[in-house]
Image (tube, rainbow, N blue to C red; front, top):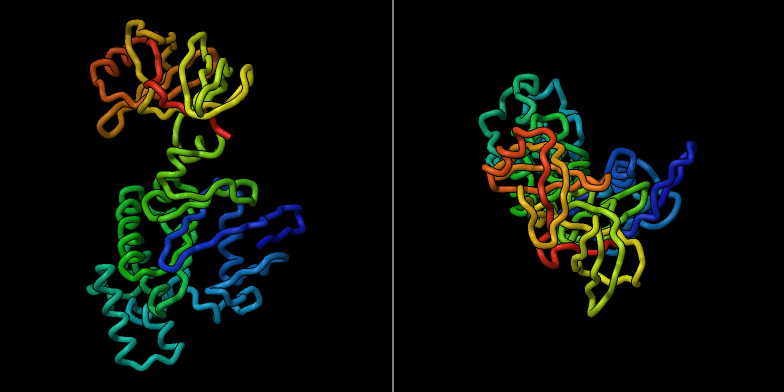
Length: 344
């Protein structure tokens, strides 16, 4: 699919395949085309090229209401004049379901989402997190062939959003509903998706599982956006059997990937593969500490060397406390053997 707008903004061409029961996340920065792509799938925006098919059937010109889609928006958009029960039951009722079937479906979803006690409450009487659960139940009530979620957790506080990520993933797996989920949050995408498509400037930069994107990013942009690791430019000194020896800050080390001798390449090293010490180590180089930030079970230490910033995750509390009290502190940096890789 593709679409160009009057202001010159271009989306696509987007080439994606989603398997039955799979959860696909569209991940990318603001303006990358995530929501526009979702709205083309929903039928709210008509593509100017390409086709959208469901199980081999062309749906490109099919009206939104006839696509069998359930949708959860960034704003829950519940019906304020109805109670929770009637919000969830609205879709099946419009579709002509018999009353006992509607009741069974509402109760089933309310139990799954732990909102049965809310069924007779007015929408204005439920919290933000509860309202999102109601919106999810309403979107699932008609047993849609495809569930679309557009940044559904962006208005919630982080702790509540984390909890609802798990709820969404559990429900999607339990019902085996095919899902497309839009977010700009790497952690959210990793929590809910089987597969992630990273968008940049209206096109797909890379598609893969969370592990594939984290361990094998296709570019410096992917590595930086998903937080996979440090990226920096190094010079290739030699190459052999799929590995290259590169130099950075006066030191040589081996990385995965091949390139010709003398080439400048982008290298990625994950933060957990960066070693720090107060005294020189074999193959290390000196760097100055820029910041020390406590993390769950570790410390995030940012250092700078020759104008390049590197981040390390260090479980050594004593080291973190020591360098954190000295400004500026000098540490020595090296990378775990064969931990880096050439990007692109």
